[in-house]
Length: 341
Ligand code: AQP
Image 1 (tube, rainbow, N blue to C red):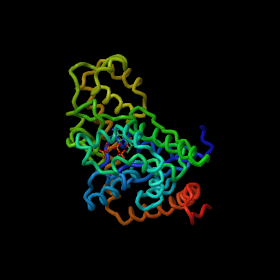
Image 2: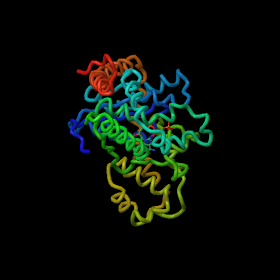
Image 3: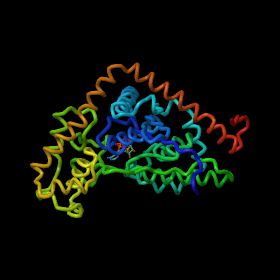
């Protein structure tokens, strides 16, 4: 079913730790670019998602503010975009309950992120971790968002969001929720670990050397790239030559995304080079792009009062969109007293 809703962009990031280069290239950089498309943009620190695994309360507060600083330092403008943390807009959790009742156990059982994160000890995982995708659907659909920029790892959750919207519309005989489009674009939709090219770069990886943190200084960024795992061969003539070389492929993709070029264009330039030549080039580029962002985050974090004010202003703006949509959803479902506007 084609959506007839006005285009609106929504996306979020969990404040479950420090931001990584993966978050920057797969999400933040693209969030900033989407502000220039003329479509309304809403961006969220999804703190309710973060507590699906244990978070120390003090650390969670600090991380939420730091992720907010990361958004702004990456070019998300809190005037042009609505920037806020999820828990300040209660409508997300309220709609999530309805979606818990729309989504089927079988659908959630298929989610690979739950399997990965719960690991072998499924019985001990929180109910929230299992129900996570229904809350994510609510985050998006409580704004009738039509476009969601994300990294490759979120594709399955977005398909579930579409299934939930379609089932709700079908069950209640309405065309109320849009069928959201995932926007997964660019050279770095899946940035891989610097220690293992088959694993996603992740803020919760136990090895700090596996990732570039957005708060790393220039020396640390350069050192991590110098030490990144590679193989002994020179870079090939074409991208096909990287098929069985995940670590090399990852570094080429990162270079492409940071320089705003395609991986094809990069491989043409660097064909035949040894990593001894390519890694310093990549390190220079990464430092050039990332160090100013890190410095800006440090500056912004000196005034957490201002960050808190930005978040509550954003939440107020977000609520003006979410409240009437939630009220209409309640009305459709049959809740007495729901005041649809
Ligand atoms: N490695 C990555 N490459 C490309 N995009 C990525 N994203 C995350 N890692 C990469 C994108 O960043 C957005 C926010 O993701 P998130 O932090 O909310 O959740 P996540 O995908 O679970 O990220 P992490 O770093 O792996 O967090 P933890 O370790 O807490 O689970 C999403 O758009 C995501 O695709």
